[in-house]
Image (cartoon, rainbow, N blue to C red; front, top):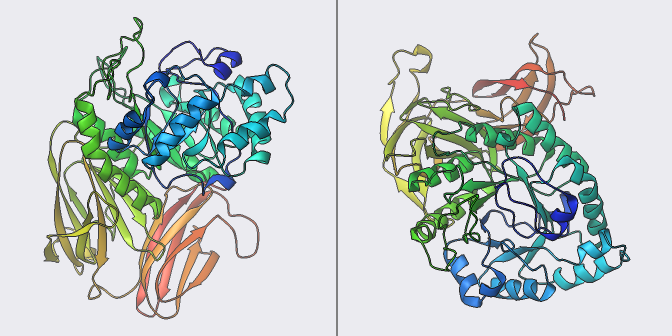
Length: 532
């Protein structure tokens, strides 16, 4: 967020922060460990950094926040941290289906003034049963010297409230000299503090250039989240301030669409309420101006966010397999490679592959052009029908398709394929979530997809069209089987964490996944990076 002084209670006491800081709202919260909080977290989160100030926290203002499509509220810019103010915000929020991350100024009495730790029981009791409460908020962009204290607070609160998570936003990749340094910072955070969710901020669009780091940061966060088994959120640029330029609507959509392509579980907009005037950062009006008036961004979010939320909640119930980029490949991205999901792409797009529990196929198609509307045309083998999600969960509508047969003469091995072509019209930076229905009349034999690829910690195999006697095998470069599993007919989603059938773990390297059944065989190459 922005390089502001850490003026909020706990963060101020922790010391100065570095990096490219987003603006830092209230800085105190309770915390906890990761695993027990999955039930407390909404499947998909939309929030605006920051909430209306305490003196503007009314039922109407919180309803206005919900009207912009947001379902989580964070503290205000100069939040009081008082229990009464927090409970008032949570009461208004609960009435409109919003939940709050809150900080409480009493934490300082325990961790800096020597008051008995029993005060934590009182703090937890004040919030944990409130329907408008989501979790505890502590600080923004903590530095490694902060981690030990935060870990202690998380541990103390985990004993008292195993349901509600703490949330702390981390520095993005641009705040470090290189990728390795940023990754080391995130790993130290996870392994010391044990958060329930990973969240970073990274702003791509400077006044004089684009950083070219957005996709690299998102892809790396996706990989780390998979490795540690926790979801990730991301705070995106919206308001013009400091070195950051005014955005187009397409540039805002582009950020969110690419986050969806990588399976993000939360999106934050920086900022919702415009911060107090500051000559260093020269804040321009955000979604709500400093004077409390709506800007044009409010209507943009109110129109865009319902579809974002419907898509995010749908993807939360699926398994991310991979994301590839067609037409152009940004730094950190993986180039599109034809397979039995997608044979050909016309246009620039990020393509996120997702699988349902039974191996059902879903594609998130994001327009990689943030400045112009584009049509992305996909050739989908083995597919007979395509459905597109609307702005509410479950609102699927069938997309018109063109059937093809033997279109790829330059690829003789694929000439027996049949499928459909589908043209997806997208506004600048926009996205579409597609559900693919496989054609039972397509070639016999199973269908296999693997992701992520390369994989560390866990790989997932989405297998469909499985017939009798099906088996999934992992074979090493020498052709030796290292692991296998029998598959029931139909479809299946199978995880593999690098284990050998005879015990132990396989070494990093290139492996072949192979599925055979009575109808045929299919294979996929897997780059295994090793266990966690």
